[in-house]
Length: 126
Image (cartoon, rainbow, N blue to C red; front, top):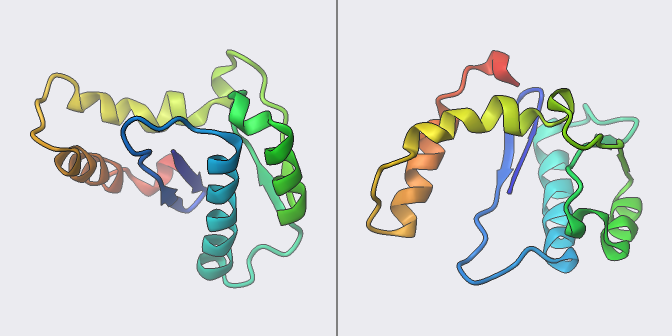
């Protein structure tokens, strides 16, 4: 899971093997995201947060919606199959496809390669 804004990547979470993203798991990431916004944005967030995520079940579960409201995040509607509304799919993740075909000996090596690739993105991308 990756959270980012116009300035760059805020949070990357790697789901442990064998786990599924549930509303509870996602809600815990939202709380972490709120803390990161407080720390990194230093007062830039004054009127709340507009939040765009896709239509995954965990994102729209009642528990998640309650957590979003509690945290003061306002969600934007996400039109299905709309390239302009899926910036991660069409702008951020293509760089990761360059890792395709490589063989990694551990999860840590995959994570390190991913971080290196994402850190190398130009600031204009965001």
